[in-house]
Structure formats: structure tokens, C-alpha cells
Amino acid sequence: MEKVMREKLRDVLAEYDRLSREMASQEVASDHDRYMKCAKAQKRIQPLVDCFRKYETEENRLEQAEAILYEESDPELRQMAEEEKHQLTDTLEARELELKLLLIPGDPNDEKNTIMEIRAGTGGEEAALFAADLFRMYSRYAEIKAWKVEILNSHTTGMGGFKEISFKVAGDSVYSQLKFEGGVHRVQRVPETEAQGRIHTSAVTVAVLPEAEAVDIDIDENDLQIDVYRSSGPGGQSVNTTDSAVRVTYKPTGLVVTCQDEKSQHKNKAKALMVLRARLLAQRQEEEAAERSANRKSQVGSGDRSERIRTYNFPQNRLTDHRIKLTVHRLETIMEGDLQEVIDALIAADRAARIREE
Image (cartoon, rainbow, N blue to C red; front, side, top):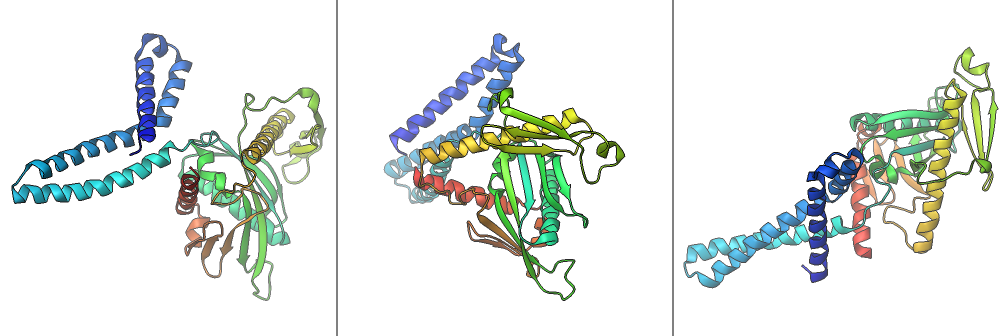
């Protein structure tokens, strides 16, 4: 292991021990906010600490095996030491790679909740039906992960599809798992409305935004134009006969967010502002990333919502992720929320790309 890398790891161990001492002190233990802040910081570096400790243990065992080879003349002991040396050399090589991965700075948004927006694109009613299928897929995945899904806004069609739907997914490290879902999702199947049995191709756009807190994005009330109006579509008489729908316009950029799913005007306004903050945060971070590296593109795609990222081919029971050239022949289970294999592959590809850039 290189000296610089070892020094970095020693610094992480020292920080971990410092946090442990703070959490054990009476002053911090009696202050809930400070204690939780320390616990969160320690949890973030825990995998790195555990991995480095294993590395040091295996490194000591390797030194012992080499000492036996240097000092011993007994053939049986030397053979055992030689076998252990080879095994530990391979193990340490793999462990060092794991440490390099863990040392790469994490995405500051990874721990955040996520706002997802699904919009029907080309394909008319079939695209709207597939938008509903994707919403169901992500909802099932969230259920498997014990996350909570809250619909923020939706526009339904007559056949039960969605022209668009936005929803919040809350839970542990949501954004880290869903951030690579943004882009154009293409579906190939025979639509319910197709009488001739022909396969049609439709498209749906998915946007994935980290939830922004007030501390992340400070919005001046003077920059907002808030309009209320009577909501349209399903919802019952109590929804449609009051001015409960809210339209928020961010005047500096003209960005518009609407929300009408709640009967309460105040709840609709709160949800609309939540989405607005998330969009503004995503926009700011995209601009900062572009400034840092104008030519850099992640291995798993640009994150541009216009990029075609995935094809769902129902006749062949096949899902293909075009960014990492992954093909899986179990589309039925994926549409039921069994997404982890695909998500893990995307995360692994991104990590590999970041290692190459280091």
C-alpha cells in the first residue's frame, strides 16, 4: 500500500476514535443533537474503518508467514506458510481495492430523500400507461426497502395511466439507490389499445431529484408568484369546488411547479415548494458539476433526462440498460420491484469509473 493512502486511512481511524470519545463524554451524551451528529459522522466512516482494520490484521498475518519462510527449515511448516502467503497476498490486493473505493468522496446527496418525476413522452395513451407501470415498479421497490412513498402531484388519463406524476420517496439512503434512474425509459410491447397485435415503442421520462431542505436552498418570498385555482380531474366534489390547487412560479427563471392532489391549499403549497427547492438544488449542483469538469461524463451516463438509458422489451421478457450494456431476462420480476440487481450494477460501474479518474 502506498504511503499517502496509508496516511489517509490513519487519519480516518483517528477521526473515528475522536468521535467515539466525544460520544462517550457526558457533555455530548446529554446533548441529543450533538450526539446524533457524531453518530451520523461515525456511521459514515464505519465501513472504511472496518475494512482497514481487516487489512491490518491480514497484513500482520502475511508478515508472520514470511517470517516462517525466512526462519524455518521444516518442509511442512514452510509449505503451510507458502500457501498462506499466496492466499493473503490475493486477499490484501482485493482489500486494498475495496479501500480505494471507500476512500472516494461520497455524493453529499446520497443520504437524502428523493423526489421523482415521471412524465409520459412519445406514445400517447400507451406511454401514460407505462408511466403508471414505472410508478408501480418504484413503489414496490420502495416497499421492499421499507421506504415511504408520498404522491405530490399527478395527472391521470382515462385508462388509468399518468400524463405525469411526482412523488417523494423517504427512507435510509434513498438517493444513493435511485439517482441513476433519471433519463428516458423506452418500452416495447403490444398496447392494450392495439387490435392488430403489433408491437409499439413508447417512451417515458424520469427525473430523480434529491430533496432540498431550507438550509440547502434559500428562496426569497419576493421571487415567488403563487396562484391558486380550482383543481381539475378526479378527486371528488370537495376537491373540485374549492380553489385548493396551487401554482408556484419562480420568477428569476420562470420555473413553474403545480400541485393539486390535496384538498388543502396549504398542503398543496407546501408540496409545491418542496418540489421547487429540489429542482433548484438539482439545477445548482448540475451547474457546479459542469464547472468542475466540463468534459467529464460518468460511466453510467450523463444524468441528462433526455438521455435514453433503458429499454423494457416485454415480448422478450428483457430489460437492457444501455449505459452499462446490462441485459436481464426477467422483466416480470423487475416490474414487480425487484430492481436491486440493476441498481447494484449501476453503482458498481460508477465506482469503477471514479477509481479510473483518481
